[in-house]
Image: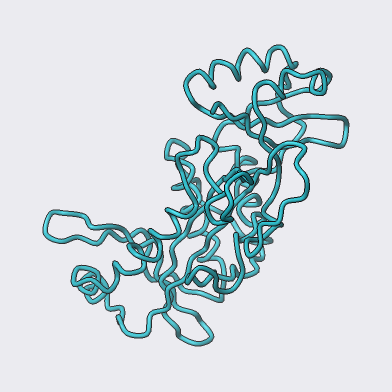
Amino acid sequence: MSSHLNRQIAGFLQTPSLWTKTQFGIRQFEFPQIDLTHFTPTPIPQKIRLGHQMEHVCKQLLEASPAYEVLLYNEPVRQGKQTLGEIDYILRETATGQIIHLELTYKFYIIDPQISERIHQLMGPNRRDMFFTKMEKIKNEQFTLLHSPAGKKTLAEKGIPNENIQHQACYKAQLFEPCQSKAINIRPLNPHCIVGYWLRLADLQSEAFKNYQFYIPYKTEWVVAPSDGVAWMSQYETLLEVNMRLLKQNAPMLWVKKGTDTIDKCFVAWW
């Protein structure tokens, strides 16, 4: 197993669920404990987008668990020649026989406390990917797809009963609070999801960051815990690279090495 894939899998498992039990009308999937001792994953295509890589990781981990049987994975729902959507996973719980429709989401959100309602405070680092919008899509489109005529037909063709299916979401997220902010209350969301902070170019240019070292991870590395074995850059070198990305309205992630023991994770906002 490649060390990068190993770290992606560890990063996926270490990322907490964005909430527990049922919130917003969506039941959170409790990911089973996985014994990785004898787990040998198959390679994952690195050219596909990060969300699809996480779908591959999740599938392999679920297949490694005796608690569930994966009946369907990434199954398209079609009406004639038109694809209406895709079912992420259909699982059978081993202990009970319960059929579970599972939708996976893995996100990176910044928290903007200037917005009053908490469910609207979470957004992608480029402010285009809103938590509230995704949550509504899961409830009103992805969950209901199974109950459409085309969804029922897809399940029937695979020999899966449509009755008594439980809809659940495996919604994992890494959250980033404003740099040097006071403690933020994000309940009922999970505060353990906060793994770093976000700042603006002016903050990065400041004297406070002058003596630190920086690394701009590839997007496939966003999931993983920061580590020391990378090509670190100075503040000056980093500012040149970051500035080019901000001009393209692309908020980069940074690893910030503050000393021998501390590596922070942050986003630099362009807006």
